[in-house]
Length: 224
Image (tube, rainbow, N blue to C red):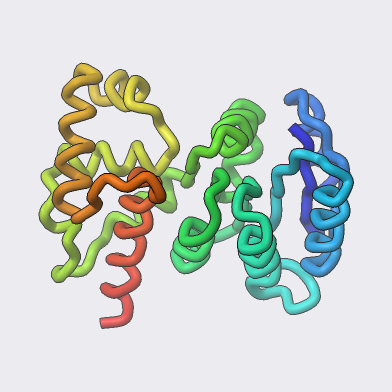
């Protein structure tokens, strides 16, 4: 996998380059600011590279959500672009914005998670394959839902399945985690889709839409 890495802290950036290289990936460019990230990715795409972006949320020049906004901008221009966002803290709006646009794989991990090479490697592989990876600590906070949310229709088991879906797990992996058959997992997922009013469509990825509905419900709860 060819990666563009954006991180303004030099030591952390070099550490990530080393980890990604050890995992067998090629870091083709690095950036220390959000505008540099956009420039590096656009250059790589023009050169015909198959890119995946790994970026911090807080980046210069604004040191707020500049890295995220650059990633969202790039996904709007290139919907199939895979993006892994790293953050020091749980920022729910960032996860919602990231999942809402594009068709490529997406991920949101806390920086503590990337100290584990296996975790980082697994996330990159899943995102490159079009999957969604969200840090379990982020998921735990997002499970606090508003009373009016359609997510209240879900059973405890269905919420467990949805949590694992949000981590990017395939049905077989969900079955192993919950010690149920693949058929049972499929039934739970079908029930989740029905309760969230997600009808089959050739244009939509219902697994991702289920996670987006979950995050949107959480956002309404905070605003009320």
